Amino acid sequence: MTAARNFAIASAMVSVLAIACLNANAEQKQQLGAWEAHYALVPTSFLKPDIAVRYGVTRGRDRAMLNISVLDDGGNPVAVEISGTITNLLSQRQPINFREVTEGRAIYYLAEVKHTDREVLRFAVDITPPDGSAQRLQFQQTMYWDGR
Image: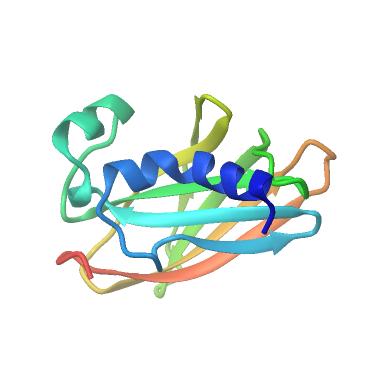
């Protein structure tokens, strides 16, 4: 990995890493064409109260914060159009309401997710990077109230 890519990844994820005590497996990524999408889903109870207020996040055992950043092939963060849905195992859908956050060179998108204990959620996030090529980030996560 190049120094520029390392810097971009560190910059894009600095807020999540600074506000939550996460293990190294918390961040995940997917290659979407020429773009790299990094994402982390973190229980909001991990956030310190002042950080939650700063980012407008409601803390609670039934809530998580989704953080997504997109990097170009040079490892630079890019602004994108982003939207998505969450589907549970009963096929109930809810929209994901993202808001863009820019801190220095970092650009990332935050959304709050409500969930029940041991609920399996399927995420479908549509990302349109600057070149207009629509991409879809998909992943599944089991959510716990005890922070597992």
